[in-house]
Image (tube, rainbow, N blue to C red; front, top):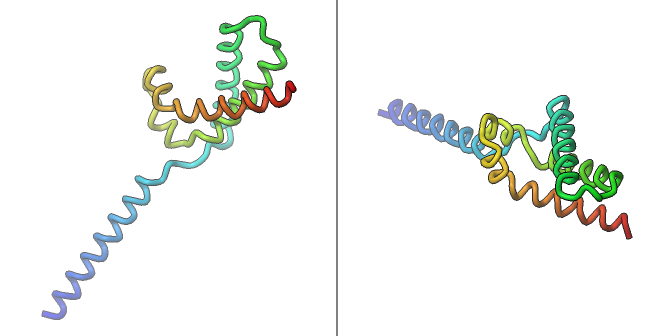
Length: 120
């Protein structure tokens, strides 16, 4: 009888450990971008940013656009994780933008303030 109780407790402990590991893994947001993935992400974000800025206002100073877009791309790369990229791969651009809106707006706000501060 005591042996059955010990086995039951052991099984319960293993199950609890499994649940704890599963919850930890699902709560982990992913690793920061690094290496080639980060470099490619930054380059792509910077190019896209510069294109959108020129389309929005062709009269903007090129150096100002470059400064903002460099800050924006680096800031976004700091906020995006490998889990974000995995989750968003293959999705439509509108879905990606909706999912990443808070991170994009945060990077935009910080970089706009830095560029404005540098202009004054």
